[in-house]
Image 1: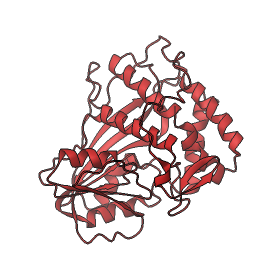
Image 2 (image 1 turned 90 degrees about the vertical axis):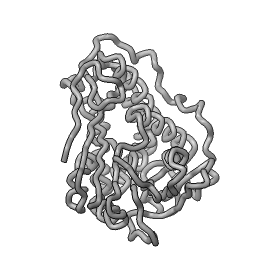
Image 3 (image 1 turned 180 degrees about the horizontal axis):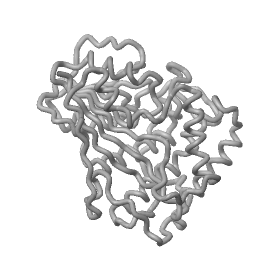
Image 4 (image 1 turned 30 degrees about the vertical axis):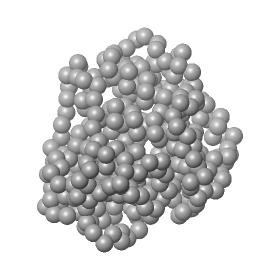
Amino acid sequence: MSEHNYDDDEAFLLEPDSDLSADNVDTDSALGDGMSVFSSTASLRSSLINHRDENGRKYHAFKDGKYLLPTDDEELERQEYQYALCLYTFGALSFAPLTKVNRVLDAGCGPGHWVIDFADCHPEAHVIGVDLSPVQRYTPSNASFEIDDLEEQWTFSYKFDYIHSLMMTGAFRDWPGFYRQAFEFLNTGGWLEIQDIDFPLRCADGSLPPGSALQKWTDVMMEASGKAGFLLNTCGKAADFMREAGFVDIVRVPYKWPIGRWPKNERMKELGGLVRENFVGGVESMSLALCTRFLGWSLDDVKTFAAEVRHDMSNSSYHTYFDLYVTYGRKP
């Protein structure tokens, strides 16, 4: 496996592993709690989704309990913001050296933004998005969406030239099984690409106090996801899963998402502010199902805790970040 690393402190924002040394200027305290950051995005109507109510939020009804995030407008708007943030970070829809893309699968397409964008950029391809509850506002003629559980046996009557997955950490219990099925349903020479985040939250220099709400949050997320069987630390193992499934020419490109505007590097500072808004707006939705279903917390417990975590995310003296990886491999 080859791995790309970039150590230049002046690296462009979208290049992997840009400098994360800390600035000593407080730049986050005036940013607010971030709960309205997604209000300017277009509303995605939750009436399009079969759903049920839980803890005041709407969750999909297909394979009830399988998906841990809400599917209401608030969360869909956050996912739209997060998708734009991924594009801003990566600077591309895909990294694999694609030469032929007649059929493309987006595994876990969510609201379908990547499907639409890739289909628009590749009119020669037919792009299929599959999720437990996809929502799409506009569909190009060369794109389609299906509701299905990709942890079950795949039933496609054809194979793909490219299979893509974006931000699916915590979505599958059996990741090795996903890689095996992806290998089976790729044409010879086809590529699988995983673009994802890896838990736990990390600290660049020991500045995060062990008793802080933010440290507790990452510990709680790891504990609850372990009990649920949806592990959050699988993205860093993607290359190993690919190799075990039979893939070759595997490449892993590492990135970092700082939480807040604490890095000295101006480009990483800007990125950190955007990343912070994503998690401030999503910490409650990310925590609700895990904490109430698997740790026995009450709704009030989660809301109070989420407010404390959001407060910690505004503390620029906490130099925290998430690892992200883009990993791709070819079926020989």
